[in-house]
Image (cartoon, rainbow over all chains, first blue to last red; front, side):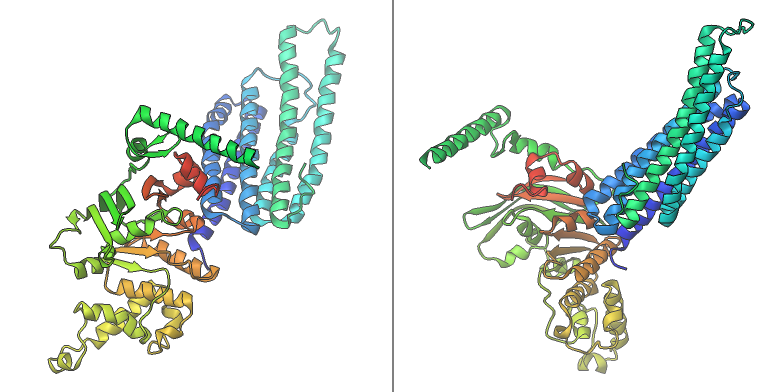
Length: 225
Length: 315
């Protein structure tokens, strides 16, 4: 094969993007566990680990810029580097969202709307990110389209959860026995709504990864918006 | 019509006044471009810091062809076991500079060279310097493949025989020093290093001129490697080749830089970006304007003129 070192750089980039994705998934997973089990130490681990993800992101971004500037990729190579360049941004954002979740886990125990199953929504979102990374690695366009379709289900779950929170809040009115202060309640409500929204965003980023992968493989921009 | 000419003239006048003013403030040096005095260019943008040892150290190198000052005060250190690319527009002095590194300019009568070039601390322009030995240590590959009109095998063994590394002749045989085996080994090793062995191993006695252009160029590289050089100078080694042959040469250059110091002149900036570790940019007038890591030159050059050149807006 010709241009061997260039091919090696491309292979390395793919492996490194997947490696960054694996790390992000690991953090997301830990954040969800911390939320579920009120594990403060684990939550802090996730928050402190964000620097590592950010540094990885910057280093991969610089690798992509080097490839553009020094190797002038064209055709499928160009789409691959361009897609990777975009995908790492999505992965970095997911890392930020995991950090948010870690911060929510550090806050007081949730007493509001116990029927909202954050963990299930979170596992669904994590699964989507994992599958999108796998689709990127294996250039699996069918999986990309499935992920996009699954996002509608995740959105519906999140919508339902938000409504549950709102309903719980309305029904709570006039509940004089509650010892909560208004501030505590407000904190709890916004935290829960943000948790749901952040998980919904994780799904959106998974769709972005899938969309860029689809573009990369088939030059098909149907999922890009 | 005359209006537009007038406008142009006045703009030029303003531009030159402006640059003149900026130069005056900084140094009395030679005018370069807006905001770039010679002093600044030389002091800051050509001071390349690198880890490891310098193979070649060039100090205040000047070359004149008759009255034409082709290379002006170029100083640069070239790190060993790496690829250094020299880029710049036609007539910028990059090939002149390259030829100074193994005293090829000695062959041009009108050329006058002033300054110092040291190979691992030894001045190559010393009057006692052995030119044959020098060009053995610093080999060269030219733009157009120029194999000898002999067999592939003889192209490789010619140099070592000249240098006395191989004895193969009637006299040598009479004295029992026939190095046919050594020659075969050398031919194979050199051709393998030049990534040509697989293509020619079954026809080593064929005439080299029957090879394709890309193969001929790799043969010339093999020929250069056969005398075991330390530095390989390449002057546009791939400009006459198609993209496939070019990429083979590029792969080869990268491979060679593990053991040799490669200095390559290329008009193809993308090629310089792809294969070099550091890049020196020469601009019109024979000045070295910027010299740095290749990614720095191609992603964030200091000089506006270098930026204009590599983005294709000038030169």
